[in-house]
Image (cartoon, rainbow, N blue to C red; front, side, top):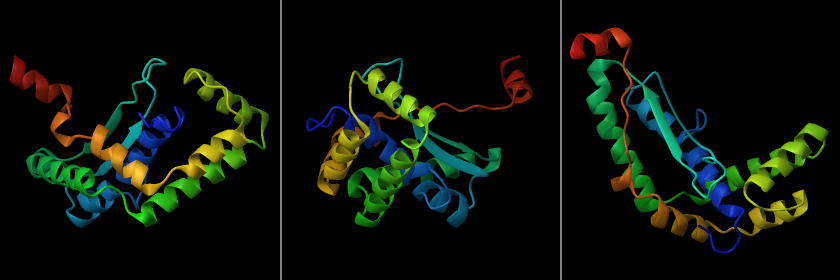
Amino acid sequence: KLKKYKFLTPFAYGLIATVLGYGASSRLHRHIREDKQLAYSVGAQSFNFFNSDTYPLVIYASTAEATAGKMWIEMENELHKFWKDGITEEEFKKVKGSYLAKTEMWQETNSGRAEGHKLNLKADLLLTAVEEDLQVQSLTLDEINAFIKQYFDPKKISYAVIKPKDYVDEIFV
C-alpha cells in the first residue's frame, strides 16, 4: 500500500493497469499486438476484490495457438521490463491528468457523484472529490515507481490459459 493515503492504493493499481494495457497507446498493446503482432487483443485492468484491500491486476490477451508460446515470452519480458524500469514521466502525467479530468466530469452528474461515493465507501473512506483530487495530485512518480517495485513482482504472476471447449475436450477425453 501507499502509506501516504489509503485511497492511492487502488489508484496506483489502476494507473499500472492503464499504462500496461488500457487502449492503443498502452505498452502491451503497442508491443504485443502492434510491434510483434502476436495477439488479436491485449489489455489489463484492476478492480477491488470483494471490498478488501486486494486489487488484482488482470492482464489478458487473445492469440492464435501457433503464436501463444512466443506471446507469453514477450509478455513476460515486457512485464519484467515494466517492473525493473517503472513508468515514465510522460506516462505518469498522461494517466494522472486523465484520471483528474474524469473525476471532474463525474462531479457534473448525480450518478457520477454517487458512484464516486460508493467507491470511496468500499475502500472505507469518506472523501470529497476535492480531497480525492488533492491526494492524486500529490502523488509523485518516485512513489508510484517504488510501489511498482514493491508490489508488482513479475515472478509472482499466476497464469491462466483459456481455450475453446472443443479443444479442451480433445485433450481431456
